Length: 345
Ligand SMILES: [Zn+2]
Image 1 (cartoon, rainbow, N blue to C red):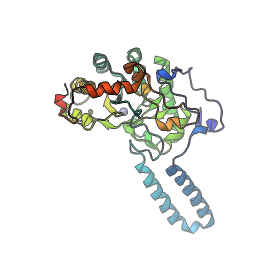
Image 2 (tube, helix red, strand yellow):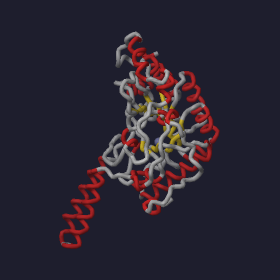
Image 3 (cartoon, rainbow, N blue to C red):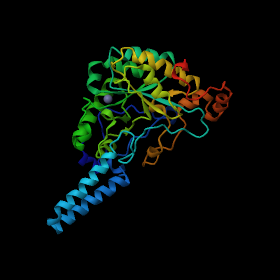
């Protein structure tokens, strides 16, 4: 659906019937209300006002065009800072899970980008099963078409499949809103058709967001999700160093980023993932997918979105009361935070 139609408050019908969980205990998310529910951040509002004022100034005094252009250039340079993956200057960004009060230890989320890949994904799924961990896979639509059975396997094993564009274009952050919408929607429709699960989260290539991305996500009913810490597993050939980056000051609510594709080190995931999961288990962190994590505060504030529920992940561990689990966590033998990754098991 074009952006202009959504701006006219037309009802959103996006491809096949969405397969959203409808019960709060399933970690259900309410769908986005569409573009009419989009609320620009103060930085975007200020920028829009500045552009309007600049247009008026140019019409009133065209000879000042150099000054006006310089002001607009400075504004765009400032907005560029908001394109940084973990920035919230340009719109909501889930870079960390909200951790409900009293839930100690809280969950951590594991995310894998760029899959599926038949050389990596099956081994990765087995590793996750071994540690009873769930993850979110930000897949590339084009790769999903090549290996649809891998997407179905992800869903069958309780993981979530999310949107990482159709073709992973590295210049995505510079595209027009209409081009971005086509790319995202194509991946959205492809993934939904293959695995019957509509993605709820979007992560742009390299995490670089455009200042114009937020209204596109409102229309496509997706939330931006980046990460708290990343391992740089695609560029490093040292698993120890990747693991250290992920575990250093690991805290409840952290969203971790790795990649579901071949890396410089041939057995990077086999070296990193088991020790990462053993470490998380040792501290009592449950490893969850984003879909089964608590609702982020910015989403709860959106019209039509539900209040923050306790997710099934917590309830299943503690008989429905996440506070009950915190006592168990405190009774575990004390372990020193920030210990050497190799000692994590
Ligand atoms: Zn990627």
